[in-house]
Every structure is written in structure tokens, then in C-alpha cells.
Length: 189
Image 1 (tube, rainbow, N blue to C red):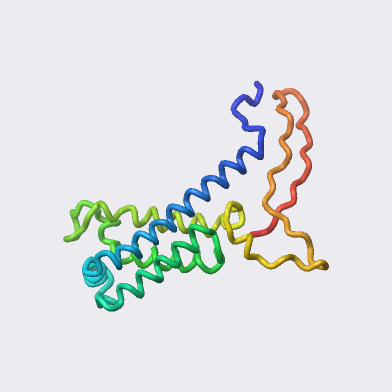
Image 2: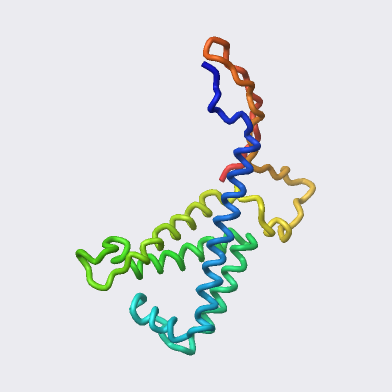
């Protein structure tokens, strides 16, 4: 039997992974921007959300523009992929706090055990998981502006390597010897 279902192109796999991480990063950053803009467009909504889900922390109308500006700035950093080493953990903190704030709706989306739950808050779990994916695969996300702002490597420093797909091995049938593939350089995460 031949490997008809095997994708022999490591490049295609890397490209799909890179594009998927780009879409995930841009959508999560856009969510932060929308949440931040909402604090300017409808500060009363922000105060109500803080009062109901975050134990009244920062439920002042005067705090909404400050929080909104911080969320917009975070969203822009995430969308652009700038300062990912710092922006992603902050993003995890924000989305993690949101997840904790609506935990009842995640555990019981239809209100069978808890009162005042809403199935529309269940995606908070998925959003938080998406942020964890961004953190886990940060080095594989290569379509970002953060690389523009990196310092140039020093002449005596080791060359920067990225996650590289191995050269595709020729497809072989079950009776032939396995083909050797060259080793790819990998950067440790």
C-alpha cells in the first residue's frame, strides 16, 4: 500500500500552521480591541459587567476609559505580534479572569445547577484555550511584526534558527526500505 493519505510536503504543513496561528492571534487581539472599545462606547455596560462577574472590582465609570485603553493597547500588540513574550501572558491573565468570572456558565451553561448562567459565556473557555495555544506555539507563529522590532543578532552570536520542516521523504510502498530524511534544525521552545 502506498502512502496516498500522507502529506509529503512539510512546507504545506508549516504554511497551514502559520496561517492558523495568524488567524487565531488576529481574532484574539481583535476581541481585546472590541472589549476595550466597548468600555468607551458604553461605560455603563463595563460597570455592570464588573459588578456582576468580577465581584465589583474596578466597577467605576471613571475606570472604564483606563481599562478600555489598556485592552485596546493589548489587542493591538497581539494583532501585530509585537512583544509576544509579554503580551500573551497578559492576554492569558485577562481571558483567564474572564473565564473565572463566568465559571458557572461554563460548568452549567443551561442553569440546571446554578442560577443566572448563560450558554453564551461558554466560549470563554475556548478563548482561554486559544490563548494557551498561542503561548505554546509562539515560536511557530512567524507572520508577525514583532520580528521587525527585534534587535539585530550580534556577529559572534549563534545564528537564529526557526522551526523548520524536514525535507519531504519520497513516498515508499510497504515493501521497500524506509528512505532517510535529512535532519532539520529545530529551535528549542
